[in-house]
Each structure stands twice: as structure tokens, then as C-alpha cells.
Length: 298
Image 1 (cartoon, rainbow, N blue to C red):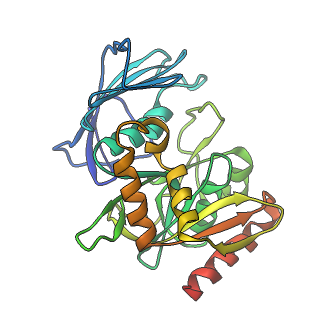
Image 2 (cartoon, rainbow, N blue to C red):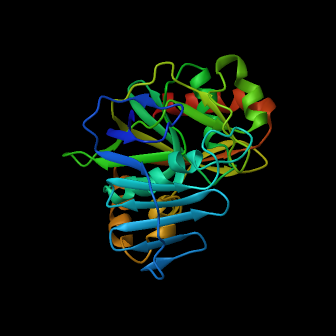
């Protein structure tokens, strides 16, 4: 058995999950090996997922099947060898989409985003796959801003209605080009392969499991130039909804609650659009632009 901690939860796992913080026991969540029987129908269905009452089923050809039950239990039936470094296995999926859906079941607002710690508050970056969330976060980390979370931005609201980000794992997933840019500041954690060829990289320096208030969100868009602009509240809301986990899978079940959470987030956080180019030669210029914008505080 392995004990981990992530997103404020104690996790007991029968599967070793590299790059996670050690836990203390008394688990909130259990990950077990077992048989997963897919239901014939569901409330919501997609090409590799099915949602029933309180449960989500996911499956990937030649990799395995997963059942997520009520935010408490994850049953895993792997096909690929969990110890085989030469093939894609189910571990990246457990740390990615499976964890994101489990957090949604537990009442978190879950967004596709990364975040760093800037002077004791969380600054987050949302964007579609390949837009540069992790690259932006790791380069801010390289400049001294501790990582809070990568790819999964899990938020709850405190008694004052302020959004609180719960730290995830002390690592990021980078493509080879991004890794080569920062390899002097991080180590490859594991030879585990992902479908899109991402590398698991250490970002544990300064990492803390303590939740942080979220004060700024940048929505990343690809462009020919770099710049930061302020959007209207309605545009902000639509951006948050588009980047939420619930928008894709739970659209017919918990979408109302998701809309309320997104609206609450917009009302309590400054949201801006961050237009970036994919020129690695301009990364430091991008970091400086973000730092200057945060310093102005507008």
C-alpha cells in the first residue's frame, strides 16, 4: 500500500504513483485494483466515458478501465503493464482525468489549469492542451515562484466566498522542447510515457500542501504577439465554463452547480487574457510581462 496527499486529500493506493507527496494515512480516497464492469447505458455517454448515478466509468484501449465512485473510491483494471517503461500505462490517466473527475464528485470546481505561488496567493493559467499552461508555470517556478498545481486547478470557496486553490502534485508534465528549456532546474522523475509524449519533471522546491487564495487568472490564447488584456465579465465567465471539467462530461447532470461556481469565481478574481507566441526565445519576456502585470495589481 502507498500513502499520498494531494488536493487536501489523504489517498491510499494499491498502485505506486510517482511524483506525489507522501501522506499520513486515514485516507479520504482509496485507489484499488479490481474488475471494472462497464454499464450498458448511462446518464451521460461519450467515446470513452459513461456517467451513472454517483459513478463515472472511463476506459482507454490497450491501457485499461476505471470506475470512480462518489469521490471516494477508484477501482482500476489495467491492461498495460504498470511497471513497463516502454509502453503507455494507466498511471498518467489516474493522475490526470481520473483525479479531476474524482475532485468534481467531491464538490470542487475543477478547471484545466496550472498555478504558482506569488507572495502567498495563487496565480493561475487556464488554456487548452498545448497552449502553454505548464510551460508558463515551470518558467515562473524557475524564476522562484513555487508550483501550486499543474493541469488540474481544484477550487473550493471559503466562508467569505473567496476561491481557494488546493495544491496538487509537486511535478509538471512538459513536452521535450519545454523540458530542454528548463532541464537545469528540474529532474526527470520517471520514465513513464504518456500518449502525448509528456515528461514528468520535478517541481518540488518550495512546494507546500497548504491551500492558497486565488487572486489572478490568466486565460492563455495563442497569437502572433504577446500581450495581456482585460476581458468583460461575460467573456470571463464563458472562458471559465469552457475550461471546466464539468462542461464536457457532467453537462447534463451538475452543470447548474458548475455555472454557479464559475460565476462566483469571476466575481472574486481578476481574470485576464494572456496572448502568447510559441517562440521559446521569448519565454523570459513572457515571464517579465506577467511579473510586471502582477506588480501593477490592476
